[in-house]
Image 1 (spheres, rainbow, N blue to C red):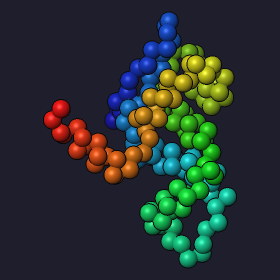
Image 2 (tube, helix red, strand yellow; image 1 turned 30 degrees about the vertical axis):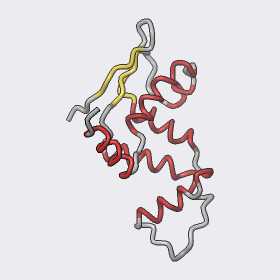
Image 3 (cartoon, helix red, strand yellow; image 1 turned 180 degrees about the horizontal axis):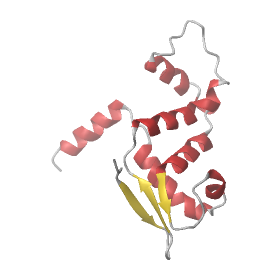
Image 4 (tube, rainbow, N blue to C red; image 1 turned 180 degrees about the vertical axis):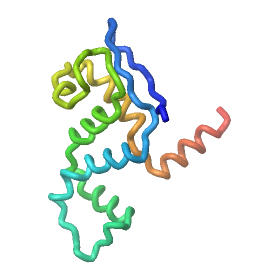
Length: 133
């Protein structure tokens, strides 16, 4: 199944195609990237049920400083870029070698598309969008 994607023009003949649909597998990769660096720094009580998503989420939110935000961005870029106009393969080493001004619009769009939004925020956005203006 071909996933939907969009092309971001980067000036001149440079472009990047990114996936606009997040698959379950991508979401798992993003969450793993977000938590991998924090897990070693957290003090997890032996009584905590790690299958309880709310408990884990609350623990992580209480320890936001433990997150490696670069790991999250790297995961978005590595798994979100479908293709680009350059002959180089899509790897973190190549992405890290790109100018910040080139990566910024790509990452901004990926963060918008892939960022997890709480159910409360989704409900507020839905209610707001349904109200007449």
